[in-house]
Amino acid sequence: MKNLRMKAARAALDLSQQQLADAVGVSRQTINAIEKGDYNPTIKLCAAICRALGKTLDELFWEE
Amino acid sequence: MALHHAGVFFGLMAGLLAGAAFIMFLFKKKILDMHFDERQERARGKAFQYGFFTLLIAAYAYGVSDVLLGRWCDVLTGVTLCIALALCVFAVTCILKDAYLSLREKPRTVMTMFALLSTINLGFGGMYALSGDLVEDGVLTFRAVNPIIGAAVLVILIVYIVNYLLRPRDEEAE
Image (cartoon, rainbow over the protein chains, first blue to last red):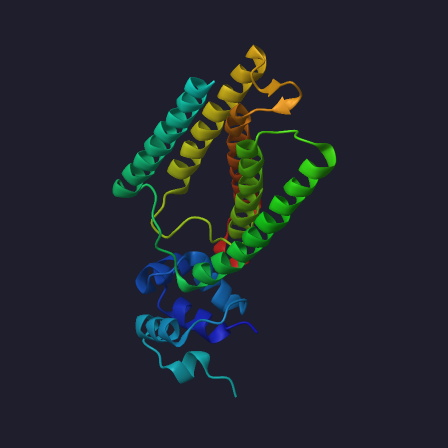
C-alpha cells in the first residue's frame, strides 16, 4: 500500500526524494520504494524518516 | 613440462596479486565502496542466494558435461565459467533491484572501469584466438579465462546501461 502521508510530508517541506534520502542515509530508490509501498522499512529507518520530516511514527506509518 | 607448469602457476599468482592490489587501491580511493542501505542489503542477500544456487547448478552441470563429453576445457576454465555465470546472476539481480552500486559509488566511474576491464580481457581473448592458443587439441585452454571474464563484465555493463536507460527520468513517475 502506498505511503501517501510520507509523500505529503516530504512535499510539504519541499524536499525531493534525493534530499530526504541524503538526510536519512539511504538511496533515492529506497525512499521511492517506501512511498510506493514496495518496501517495508525497519523501525530504525522509520524513526530516521520521522525525524527528518518532523513527524511522529504514528503520523507517517501507523495504519488504522 | 614442470617448468611450463611453474610458469603458469607463478603467472596466475602474479595476476591474482596484481588484481587484489588494484581492488585494494580502488577501495582506498573510494571508487569502490561497500556501504549499502537496508533495502539494498536485503536485495543483495536475495541476489546472493540466486548466485549461490546458480554456482551449485553450474558446477554440477560442468561435472556432468565432463563425464558425458570427456574433457572439453581446462578445469580452471570450467571453474571460471561457473563463477562468471553465478556472478552474472548476482549482478543482474542486484541491478534490477537498484542494489548493485553502493551509496557512495559513482556509476559513471564504475561503469567506465567495467568497460575498460571488459575490453582488455576480450582483447586478450581475441589475441589468443588469433594465435591459436585458445583451443588446443579440441580443449578450451586456461587462456579462455580472459574472454570469459571479459564477457561476464560486458553482460553486467550492458544490463546496467539498459536498466539505466529504461528507468523513468522523473522520480515521482517511478
